[in-house]
Length: 178
Image (tube, rainbow, N blue to C red; front, side, top):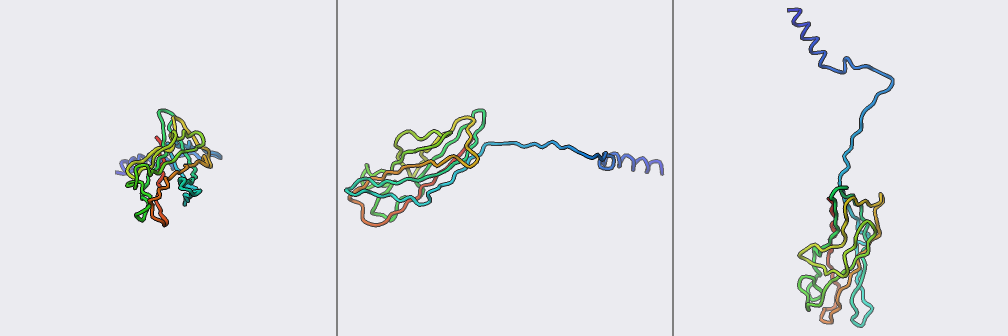
């Protein structure tokens, strides 16, 4: 019985590496990290005021933002989009979803810093779909501090039919990467 117990204890001790590991003045470990795709943005103009020069010229303004992105080095891509997630209110003024006149649009153009490719020309904002602001290709990398400032320049038709008052809408920017 003693032989069996001693054998069981020895077999049990062999399975505990810390009891038999050698202690040395130095030791090594292998560090392993998996770097994946990521994307983030910061809207630098939390309130964008659209103003007119008068004479029923269009309302204009600009929203600045900074982005960080890393796309895959094989087949990677990325986008920045925007959507009007809350239309102008109260009623009686401009509206993206139900304009007083079909030409009463909220449009924008984009000015971006590499590695982004800006939206082409004038885009019409939408309450029902995300519309393009920027695109990124394979193996795109921003700077550590972020790439910016980038801007979206807004143009809102100035229709004489709008009731006087203050109107607010919300534009939501979204960035993604693969």
